[in-house]
Amino acid sequence: MRKNIVAGNWKMNKNLQEGLDFAGELQTVLNGKKINCDVVICTPFIHLALINKQKTGNTVKLGAQNCADKVSGAYTGEVSAAMVASTGAQYVILGHSERRAYYGETNAILKEKVKLALENNLIPIFCIGEVLEEREAGKQNQVVKTQIEEALFELSAEDFGKIVLAYEPVWAIGTGKTATPDQAQEMHAFIRQTLVAKYGEKIANDTSILYGGSANAKNAKELFSNPDVDGGLIGGASLTVEAFMPIIEAF
Ligand code: 13P
Image (cartoon, rainbow, N blue to C red):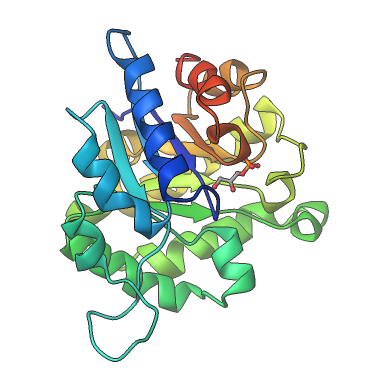
């Protein structure tokens, strides 16, 4: 059966010391608590190896927020999937709408990144979602379907089975305007149906589909109570342990 996951996406926040402090504090708070979901923190690259060294056990899992679409070589400033894996990270966010919008990441580029992530045993948290104009035009399902088809549907069933999806409506990210639980459930159910049609019931039912976009302590419980919402990808509310813990405890 699919896992429930609460993942924090720090984006470009926290210097090294702040990141280490946060990770230490989160681990302390989680220790001894019964938690009903996997907890992941997706940090900037520079934090990964040191947080991994500092942490004990696997209560808090680590992820990167991106990796290169090339294996290695003369790509100044890039960080490869193999490098991410060598830090001890287990996850990598790919296709975040901020990467798509500000860094020109297309579905074709993302297809390469997903392939390399999987080859290096990283679990992609693959983000999909429509912008406001697309929703207002009623095109959200088609947009999300195309993102999935173009970046992921050449994967074998075995490889697809390793992917985590995150539905993040762009109009809800950092805006305080959360999708309603019904809007989230409707889209997540549509995504799962799309997976059923391509990979069959078993893989579709085993795929975790997270919601992201202004999720917080107040709305997490209601969002997560939907049958097809298997957790959250949390931005702003993942930056302090006080804000992040109630989201983890919403399961
Ligand atoms: P916010 O939770 O800050 O809206 O960000 C969501 C997000 O983009 C997570 O990847």
